[in-house]
Length: 267
Image (cartoon, rainbow, N blue to C red; front, top):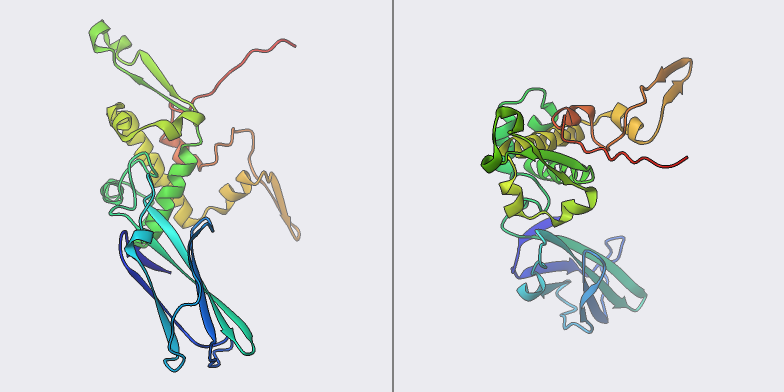
């Protein structure tokens, strides 16, 4: 798949061949452009073409390669129909348009790729991250962010005006419920205590590394598997912990920040 910057004229060229790569002579060429959600953006019936050229180039104008509000990247799909004497040959071509930055604070990440790379310099056991390409790192960081923002969390911040002793330094507690994560802005995030923001970034980087390494035991836990038998060998997977959808190594960075809601109900 190809990537193009936002507001860029994209040229898609396709040959006049069937699905067996045998040359065909089209009698008409139709095309439709869709977004990544399969919503049609443009219908292009009866495109002009030269049957002797052996190919057709379609220019998708920059106005149709614009990102929506809050989007950092978006897909485009061009579906082509070549009408021939022996039937219709259908082809599809897809590409991605990207904004200036792939990661944005509190949109799909707690940090940029550059910040994650600097953080990784002081961490050990990041073999998955170290051996990954930038594209793989982007994907892993985004997925890690999605997982972490499904966890209710809390942090405490100082009340400087009413501070009387060190025991009150972190007296005021803020809770971020799962439903509140999508509403947190970049400005609000940057106002949170530095120690909590660093914990989130460490957790995101650790979970991204776990994703890049592939943890078969963690996958089995998330699937609800408690035991596994292969031939004459069996293995029990420890249970009893609350499953948050992230690895145990990731949760270590969130010690004291995971929010548990306790309700008392009448029997």
